[in-house]
Amino acid sequence: MSAQALLLQLVTGVVVGAIWVIVAIGLSLIFGILRIVNFAHGAFYMLGAYLAAFAVGWTGHFWLALLVAPLSMAALGVLVERGLVGRLYGRGLVYSVLATYAVSLVIIEGVKILWGTVGPQFRVPAELAGMVNLGFSFFPKYRLFVLLATALTVLGMWWWLYRTPMGLFIRAASQDPLMTQALGVDISRVLAGAFGAGVALAGLGGALAGPLRGVFPEMGLDILVESFVVVVIGGMGSLLGAVVAGLLVGVVQSFTFLWAPVFAHVVLFLLMIATLLVRPQGLFGTE
Image 1 (cartoon, rainbow, N blue to C red):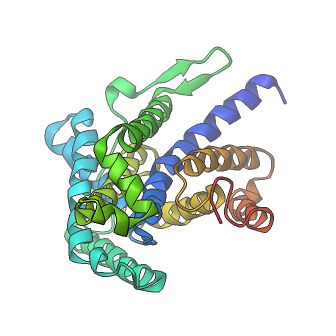
Image 2: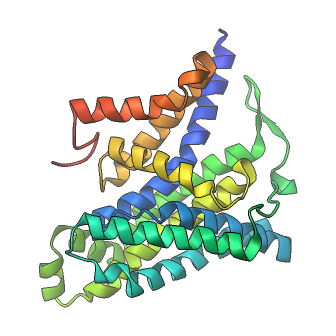
């Protein structure tokens, strides 16, 4: 196989992994701060895609849709945290799994009732359509934009968590919430903000993936499973782990599609099993 073909497959894998990175960062953020396993994350991802598609249909502006989807999902995330998730802190993971899974079912069935089982059309915007010459091959312009958007999102999250007061409070709350509250920080606002940020990332991932994967009610089910695999490989609660594992899994699956397509979906779980056997806490997780 030529070097050009290998490079093309590598870039394809990185782009595939980019969507997982965004969604997995949201999952990891919520678990790392709130210790909540958010099984509604896939449904929030789907809602983000729907909101972006409707925003494009109503306004004709793709860039506006990329703002509407995550901001709207952040607001919804805060409402869910205040109304449901916030009542489950300290009760164990089983309660959060059951509650968020119920939220997921309600959202999916609600979307089917309101808009049917066939989702709206969500096409690549005209300014991002077409191909780009990478020197070794032509590549879809929109897929490169997804990669750039992911990089900017990761940098933005790093800046928010490590260069802002809210990020300082979130990191402190993840280590010792009682001491953080004793120092005068409104811990309830911090937790609501963290959950809202995680849900916003899910919505942004759906908005970016919509033109690539299509928009339909069950679109979040696969991404949820894949994102949990990424989070487990990277390490529960580790943002760096979510980034590295997402890109790694995307590249491995891309080459598996090329050489052994029948194992393309299995390889994700094989990677997870191997990681758990060698390093149970994940690549960047702590015991």
